[in-house]
Every structure is written in structure tokens, then in C-alpha cells.
Length: 601
Image (tube, rainbow, N blue to C red):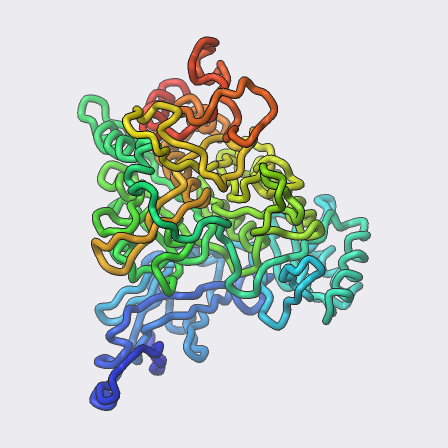
């Protein structure tokens, strides 16, 4: 047990006399005892390049005076490795003696939320508010932090240090797997930074320079058009368009079926988001220890301040507990029949796209099989289907060039080192084109390991069967084109604090994406030998249709996805689905995954 000095509680409304009455009764009866024990922040600090001795800075709310425990993989860290720094903790860990895993706090009868602590090497710094400026496009950009992609025939760290010495810079972060190193430049203005970027980019050993454009600290990661809206249809009706409940029922009945039960495989899912509100009724049950082989679904995340955040809504579609109001998680609906799913919500730091990639590399190295990327960016000047400029989540040409090279290196690394990992990415909400790299990243990449998801919503037509193409329609803001693999329901309900309370409706391709992530994870739990190209094939073979038939002509505003082709319908040239867009059918996808066990060995 570790004992630390009293940590001041977060302020909350009180009457005048109550604090006076409680003064002197000790923190056990004070505000810390009333509020939950929550981990709000955990990230590498100190020297990010140090591999053996790694420091982590932890920010917690509700940590009272007296003894407490810090548990990593359910083993208490020795008190000598836990140090108080102001209102937070600093953990000093020997990486070679430990392994990545869930970390949590315990004090008295209170349990914190578990967060994922990765001991891998990919760590980058975010800029502070005084380290950013507005560029000529009016976008927030980092002044003195940039990243260099080193050519693969060079020793990355050695070359990064050489460049740092040459330009009076310092190496402060890295994604070693991609040969990327983050430099702090001796620049005070954007003019000075841009001059150094040009000189760095001209170095023979440098493949590209990544300039980060995002807000300092907590920046944007959501999609345009995803603010709460008045529901046009109940969320259950929205999800019926993908046979959500049919899929849950099928899995629960088919997997343990006595005549021929199916042996399933545990799975880890990575969700690149910031945090989740564990005060919400959807997630309160995840406080404390969680063993996937017993509990079914485990959720690891930092705690959010409110329940309707982007991360809570995305993670909730995968892991929210049932019958609590708010959201309903697909994977948590499989508890009791499933093998155990670990949902890891992680974002490394607030350093924008670079941090998203760093977190993804760490998670893949920690055994994640499916990554959920409910984010993306458009290039300044990108046009929507109406010919108007996209005005949200845009980045300058210089930033997009660096991001494109960074993401290309990531997918090349993934193909080379982890060919069985699949990334599920939102198509975007700019009413634009998802597959053109001058318009959008990362959805424009052509690789079997990237599934791109568009969004649909329930049509106003009643009395049509769920498999009728008219049952759902393209969501007006959803990006489209041949690069989109499949569409899923774009609308869901946000989490709430009170059990049984109905959350606001949130819509966007960010929320269609975890629908596909969830079903892909379930399919892999049934047949872990399925490869990314086979998963895409099964999703499209099982898909229902949406939209008009467009006979493989150039993409128009009504065309949602790549058209269904004869090989996806048993080469039946007269099949009515051919030429239409693909709409997720979760139940049939699971059925095909079961059938694939006899074909994929």
C-alpha cells in the first residue's frame, strides 16, 4: 500500500455551513470520499526516448489522504515506483520487467477506472497553448514541434540526432517502427519554422517533414455534422437497418449451441479516442478489475468530464452496458457467449494525427487486431458533391503532404509486420469524396487493411422490408465514392448520467464506424484466421443494398459505396443487388463467418 499526502478535491457546489461542519473530520468523510476515484490522465513524461526506465504522469480525481494501491495487470506496483507530484502521481517503471496492460487505482472501498498503459516506444509530445500560432489559412499549427520521417536505409535515431545537432534542435519524441522522430526546433515564429522545415526537407536522409495542425492540448477529433440533433427516428429503428439485434441474438444462440458449439477466440480492439465518462450509467460497471475471460467485455479508458463526448459515444456503440439508458454496446451484448473482448480507448497524447498514429502503433504491438479510426481530415479547398468547399476538419497542403507520408509508412509497416490487423475508418461528413487523397485522409488509401465506412439513416418510407434498398437512405453529409466499402447506421444515442435516461441523438460516420468495428471483431472471434481482404469480402457478400442502381458509371451524388459486383453474389449476373451500394447486415456477416471456418484453415 502507498500512502501519500492529502490531494485537494475538485471544487463542487456546497452550502456555506457544510464544509465548516466537515472540516476536521478527515478526508475519509470529506469531499474526496464523496466523489469517485477516477484516472483522468496517463501518459509518458520525462525522456520519451528512454526505453528501459519509463516515467508516466498520472492525474487522478478523488485520491484522498492515506494508503492506496496502483495496480498494473492486477499486481500492485511497489511504493518506491510511485511518487507524488503536486496533485498527481509519477510512476517510474522498469519496462523489461513489466508488460503493457490495464492500470488502475484502489483506495479503501473505491475502485478507479482502468486505463491502458503501453510500454512500447511510440510516444510524441503535444504543443502547449503558447507553442502554437495561426497560419495563413487561419489554422492552428505547431510552431516549434515537427516530425521527420527518416529514409528506411538510415538508422533513424542516430540520423535524427545528427539532424538535431545540425539545426540546433532536440529529439523529443519518436515512432521508431515508422522511423519517425519528433524534433523541437529553435523557432519562435512560423517564418522561422517554415525556413527550418524547408532545410530539413531537403536533407537526403529525410523522406518527409510532418507539420502538425491541431489545437493545443484537447483538440478536435470528431467529424463535422456530429452534434446532437432532434431524432428523426428512434435509434433502435436506425440500428434495425443493420440487423443489430438479430446479430446479437444469432451470436448468443449459435456460439454455445449444444449440437455444435463454436470455440471462440479472445480479441483486443483499439479505439483511437480521448476518454470515456465512467460516471455514466453506460460505463459505471467497468470501474475496478476486469478479466475478459470472466466478464466478457472489458473497457480501458481515461475518465471524461461529461457523458456525451465523442469518445464516450464511439466506445459506447462497442461496450456500453445494456438496459441502462443512453447507448447500447454490441460487444457487451455478446457477454456470456463471447470469448472476452478488450476495448482499449487510447490516444497517446493530444498531438493530433501524429499522436493517433503513435497510439495505433503501440496498440498493434500490444496485440490489438482491430483499430477503430472515427476520424479524418480534408485538404483545404476540397469540394463537396455540390461543388462547395468543405469547411470543417481541414488542413493546409503542407500539413496534408506530411500526414500522407506518415500514414503511408504506417500502412506499409502494418502490411509488413502485422498483415492480419484491420483498420476501420470513417468516410467523413463533408458531403465530399472519400477516396481522393487531394480531398481526404486516411480514407483515400488503397490497402486491404483499411475498411472505409459511410453513413446512412432510416428513410421516411414505412411498410418496406428491412432488406429493401429503400429502407435506409444516404445520410446527407456522408462522404461517398468507390473507396467506401460499406455503409452503416450513422445515428445513435449519447450516454447519460442517470440510469434509464434517454440520451441526445448523435449522427455521423464516426458512429457508423464502430458498428462495423464491432461486427469485424465478432467475426474474428469466430474465425481468427480471417484476413483483412476476406473480412471485406464477407461484409460485402452479406450486405443488404441501399440507393439506386448505377451500373458502374462515374460516381454521382447518390452513389454511396463501391458497387456490388457479380463475384459478391455468386456470379449471378441477374442478381438484383448488382450495381447497388452495400449496407451492413450484421447477422448475415456473422453467419458467413461461421461458414468460413470450414473454408479458411
